Length: 583
Image (cartoon, rainbow, N blue to C red):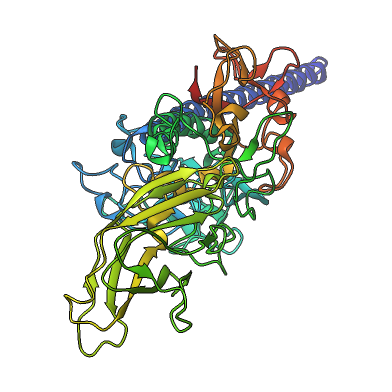
């Protein structure tokens, strides 16, 4: 009895110590498990990030490669997601649909991109979202994508935040209600087409018609998507590089050849081409693109003179004009024959005027027996645009003044010259053969002649045609709105009738980082996406180009191959200089 109480006390103490040890061990175990759980989550996230980045780079590379391909009508367009019908087809899964209603949610088209099937840490194939404006909505659909085109996906509340998203869906789980989406117990089906609510969550799971709003985070009990964005800044440099190469390949030869033939006058040739005057720089979104004989720092420079005169609607397109090329003539002049032009016939004076919207006609009367005629017509502003000749668009006829049922007769005639003038106009000369013999034709004492010019005799060059096989992509995607254009004064109409061509080191344009640098007759500068984040298009040149390319001088800067930064200013630079012609 004497020693009982101390023994019980010692037993209680041991139990208390044991409890403390158990609690400490439990705490340590829980801590270790939590740490391991966090480490496992970090590993899963890192694995997903790696896979998502591989998918992102593959997508950008694919788009750039497609954009560079000759014949690609939609350079820069993203592929649609996997066609829903291919979901459960082992030989076809991963192939893009030929068209998709945008925005579009679907599985990542790995097979179309030419890569392996990418899966996330849960073994699930990746998902993919495409912004409006960035894919073909149907087979044969034409996009309009250039450096001003925004991504139209709203991400985490930020508008125009991405052109596409790639999503690792993670494992299926019981998803709590989130936003407008009800709670759902996700089930991964082996057959399609898939319901993406079983893969994606919250705003990413708007089904069956997605909107343009997506998220990268959400409540833990309702969201396990891991998302990577593809922004305009991510993808546009690759597209711009491809487009610059296509401009060099497709557009430069065509533009260089516009006024590179003696058909435009003596002294103009492929060796010494003439370049049309630029349109003064202004907001490319509203410019009329009409060239003008103005210079900056001694050289004509501005926008490409991409105005149209035919096949367009002036009321809806500021580039369209039917009056920019004005036609005028003093009338026909007799060049042969023993008859004479009837100068005193008030009902049929020797005049030229527009007979209709498309036909400019020079008409008058002549006395027996017949005459040969010459007509010269002046067409203004030809060298202020990108024009082409169709010399078949002139017809000549004659008819008895009274008619009396006698038919109109064709008179042989042809264009004998189209000569550009120093003010940018062109003089068109037409010569006829002998008009019908009035007496032999059974006509009266005099007859009527007419020389008719279709407006398209001096018409729009194929470079302006959005349906042209080789160059239509450039027009339809409106890359001309992103090009700055300059030429040496000695290669413009102002040099006529003298010999065209600048002198190296004297009056040519200069481009730094090119050797030789000071022998450029004409060049283009492709403006990259805005580096100032200024809303474009606008009328501020520095919002399109950087440094020496934006100062209105005749010295231009080419991006160094080794870096996208200007070494002197250590600032971003994304202009791409494309030489049109040099000595």
